[in-house]
Length: 84
Ligand SMILES: [Zn+2]
Image (cartoon, rainbow, N blue to C red):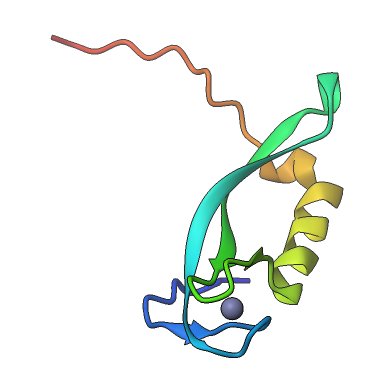
């Protein structure tokens, strides 16, 4: 599933006013061996009522990632040599 980045202002689900923004943040889950990070989670924040919330669709997608995280996560610490 591809989520498209929305740059236009949107209606806040909490107070119903326009101008809520979507931000992308990293969220950490689990502990020890189960610890992992999901990057670029879209969070809606509203300047009017000050609420930040996740959309139902986002929560659903996060659950899917958590269940299948082995196939979603990738090791980032790869030694890289630069040819100078
Ligand atoms: Zn609001």
